[in-house]
Structure formats: structure tokens, C-alpha cells
Length: 393
Ligand SMILES: C[S@@+](CC[C@H](N)C(=O)[O-])C[C@H]1O[C@@H](n2cnc3c(N)ncnc32)[C@H](O)[C@@H]1O
Image (cartoon, rainbow, N blue to C red; front, side):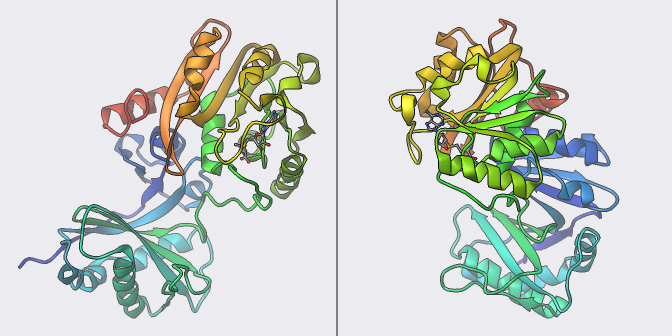
């Protein structure tokens, strides 16, 4: 019986992972780093690219969930437990040392080193992710002479890992990679104070990017722990950013997290239903995720619906200002905005924390809001590649 076949990735091959539905936003951020934007490849939840030089650029991606150096691919890996026995032989054929070297160009890897393995499995098979992680980890331990940190019974890695091998198993193909950073890119150091329904930071960065460079200050009136406001400021330090929330505790979180991030944001405690044009300068954009009535409910004068927010939002925006909202599709945001006379520029569905949510960009000027810079081309490319459709996926 023929065993699996192995393909080592060409040098400088990277993989950025993305929230499904917004792969094209990650592609637009990756493209300037890629040695050849044409060869950049979009797949479901993945953006493949080549990057020459030190990995500082890929490490600085804000919209990606995570970024990896590709080691290679193991094809024709069967789905029975016996097929797993062929995995060590395949692992030995891959060029791990070059990949470790590439990671080492971006950060210091302490010696002696330890590592862990994270696998995800798509498709039916007779073994689970822990079997794959164990088989790869034990082979790699012999090959590199590093300490393999196995998972505890609770599924936690037993110790601090210096390097993470990542395996994406889809049907009979295993994509093997090394995480570039010491921790996943989506984990932000600044996010120390958090409450319920806090937003995934790469999604916050993507919302700000989608709203485009605003023609004036940006407001997040449901700021929670400040993720959108802080990501906006980290993307553009010259932008004036205002954050507000009804909950004093969350307002405190935003202040604390902004201070951790080293950014200045005007933070106020306010029921958005009472926010008046005289309270803020004419806004270039409102970028926000309102309460979804699931983990967090609307309170104050939004305890029944978001109507008071939609009413106040248009009066706060400058003439060409945009509203960019992420919310559960069941909230019917685009329908509500259309009914109230807004023009929808983008409606994009995505999968977030197991739910289908929608990003809506809308304006009041009558002109249809357009995506800034090369975003529209990347979206079309993702549609052509079958990764998303015109509505998301
Ligand atoms: C989904 S959370 C926002 C999470 C935030 N994007 C983050 O990353 O932490 C919704 C927020 O809306 C706030 N909220 C609820 N009703 C409000 C109201 N009437 N005015 C202002 N904020 C309100 C809640 O306190 C909560 O922080």
C-alpha cells in the first residue's frame, strides 16, 4: 500500500489565517508584504503568500487571526488509525530546520526549547486531533531534540511552549506549519480588562479598515472594553477616536486597555440614546458592535430596541460620514437601516464564535459607500476563487 507523499514548502512561504467571510480583508493587508501579490492564494479561512526578508511585516498583521511559516504538505494521509502510523515517516521528510530558522529571524527562540502541536481536523476519520498532535509531537521531539509539551487531560499544554507546530488536516491532506509568533496573533497584550461579548481584535481591526480612512473623528458608542477604538488608534495614530458605553465598568476597561496599548482615546460614560450632536465633533465614522441581546443586552433607553441608536447616529455623522456595524444577522441591521433611508455600501456575512453575523456599511449622503483602496478588488478575487459570495458565504 502506498503511504502518504510529502511536499516541502518553497522557502519564504507563509500562511495567514482569517475569520471566514473576511479572508479578502486579510489578503488586502497581506498584499503589500507579498513578494508577488498575483501568486497570493485565497482559500476558506486561509491566505497563502510568499514574503522575502525578515518576518517583521507578517508579525505586524492586525486583521489576521494568526500567521505561520509553511513547512509543507502531507498528502494521501488515510483516515484509519493504522494510517496514522505513517505520519512519523512523513514528518521526518519535511524540512523543519529551515522553517525553525525562518521563525528565529523574527524572534529569539530560547534554548533548550520546548514545543507543542495544535491540530484541527476537517472531514471524517477514525482518529482525533489529539492522536495527530501526539504522533507529530513525538516524531518531532526525536528529530529536533526539543521537549514536546503534550496536552493534559483538560486539553491544556503542560508548560510554556517556545514554538507551536500547527497542522490543518483537511480530507486526506495535512498542511503543516510553524506559528511565527510565540502566541497567536489575535491575542493582544493590551487586552487585560475584559467583559462579556468583547470583540475578537482582528475583527475590530477589519471593521476599521472596511470603514476606510474617515473624513473626521471616529466614535464607538458601545465600546465595551475598547477593542474597536484601540485597534483604530493602533492602525492610525493621527485619528481622533472617541469611545463611550453606558456601563461604568466597561468604560473603566476601555481606559485601562487603552493605557496598556499606549494610545489616547477620549472615553465617556453615556447612554447612546442621549448622545447629541453637540456632545461630539462631526464624525467621520461610527464603527461599533451593538448589544446583540444574547450575552449582552441593550440597557438604558435601548432596553427594548436599537431604534434610539439608529435615530441618533445619523445626526452625529458628518455629511460623508459612514456607519459600520457588526451584529448578529437576526438583528436585521441592513433592513432596519434601509427602512430608515440609509444607503448600504457593503453587507458581508461572516462566521464568528459559531454564529453568523453581518458587517454593514451604510451612509446617509445618498451616494453608495464604496470600499477604500484595493479592498474591492480583493473582494472580487475572493468571490472568483469561491471563498465568499457577494453576501459573505
Ligand atoms: C457587544 S458589547 C461591545 C463589546 C466591545 N466591542 C468590546 O470589544 O468589548 C455591547 C456594549 O453595549 C453597551 N450598551 C448596552 N446598552 C447601551 C446603551 N444604551 N448605551 C451605550 N452602551 C450600551 C454594553 O454595556 C456593552 O458594553
